[in-house]
Length: 118
Image (tube, rainbow, N blue to C red; front, side, top):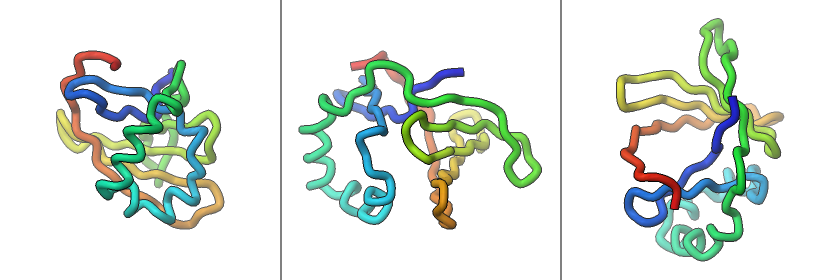
């Protein structure tokens, strides 16, 4: 199944698909704190139209993770696989695995009421 790998909120309630091919993942992981800053968010607001996806950018499939069948999303042009497990009806736990990086990056996704793509 094909999917949008990254969705960001633009205007309230409007999602913007971003193509992760433009982001140097190892550099982004190293400076992740910057991405959560006001300056980082402001910069993203200015470049997001240039990194907007024109189609799906990942593949969803079922894979084994620690002997548990789980949903996994592989990015098309990045050495990344995200593994997902349901927490409850509105939340999913995620683990990002980057090839040749022993670290694991954990995140939580919360269901949003989207009104469509912006």
